[in-house]
Image (cartoon, rainbow, N blue to C red; front, side, top):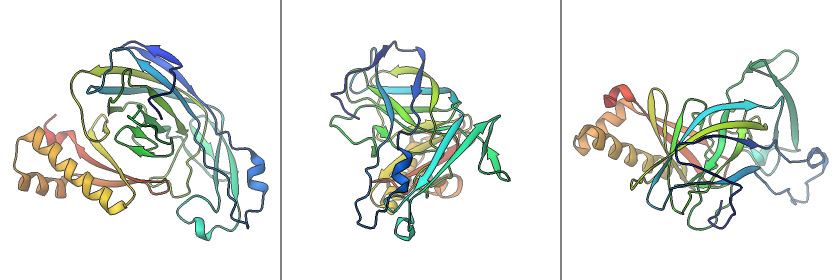
Amino acid sequence: MSPFNEPIAKVEDGETFKIETRSPGIPDEVFEKDYSDGNYPQRILSITGPVYIEGAQSGDLLEVSIDKIDLKSQGKMWMGQWMGILMDEVTKPYLKKVNVENGRVFFNEKISFPVKPMIGTIGVAPLEEIDCLRQGNHGGNMDVLSLAPGSKVYLPVSVEGALLAVGDVHAAMGEGEVLGTGIEIGSVVTLTVNVIKAKSIKHPLIETKDSYEIVVSNEDLVEACKEATRSMIGFIREKLNITFDEAYALTGQCAHLRICQVVNPLCTVRFEISKEILKI
């Protein structure tokens, strides 16, 4: 993601639009090679964008509502010696193609499970170019399960037009993404964008029907957990006007720290708290 990428489209503040995300472009022959020499293939994400949002300026907050995700009919999952939490224990590349239909993923003739579509990568342009595999305050490759239909994500705008990009859609994914992939699949995503003027946040914030989630990424998983905890304490204090001690105690009892993914350049966690606790 980059402030220098030319927009593929422009949309108005408050507009609903559709954006097509590509199926994973990794060719099948990648998984037929011998990588004993350590010359592994490059990891690449297929991202669509950026989309220029009229009226968005640096210092604003972009609200992105995920209205709908329509999936293609076939997805892929894979692993190799170059990816996944157990990549040092993997001896050969693995690719599995699955059919996705009637709301289910068909793993094999005996095993199927429900589709749970989500967006793996969504973000705005940072001030400096960042690889799409990485995540940060701009969003990026966060792989958060709740980036799903019915949710909103709030992202701090750093450049004119925000330059929103979306991709890496999954038909399903286990929390943590330990394999290194979800069920990667092409899709058509329906989004609605709203610009909140002169308001910013430090980390991406997700709003679901029932909760708020603060998303934090760091090279060190423990440091990501610490920063997410600090951010949740601050969020609770702002909403309830209580002391640090009270907010910390409430965080420890009522908020839930979850690991989103541990296989990208940075680890990502989310801290979730119910709207019921916040009286919202």
